[in-house]
Amino acid sequence: MTTPLDEGRLMAAVLTIYGRSDCRGCDALVRRAIRRGVPYRYVDLERDAGARAHVRTLGLDELPVGEVGEVRFSGVRYDLVDALAHPATPHPLHGHPSDLH
Image 1 (cartoon, one colour):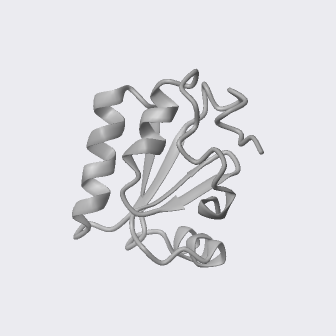
Image 2 (cartoon, rainbow, N blue to C red; image 1 turned 120 degrees about the horizontal axis):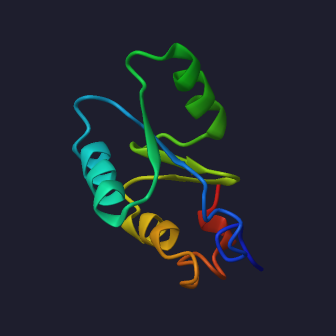
Image 3 (cartoon, one colour; image 1 turned 30 degrees about the vertical axis):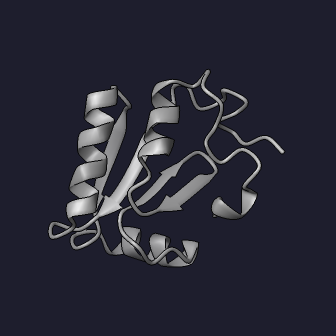
């Protein structure tokens, strides 16, 4: 099974990181995106009720929540940020579709 990252369709995609001001993992993921040159958008769930509702519909309850194209994840997933920085690299979730939400 391939994923959108495997197929290289997300080369110019923007990673959306949903988080809160007291979330150290959120800060760490943002720093990783900056260091790796991955375009990102940070959404503060404390200030954006629509974003909170969206994250709830994803069924992901661990912050940060990341979304790029059809790929959604929760927790600090450096491997996914790195895959976005290097789209020719095999996707770290290849063969593990249960990790994609």
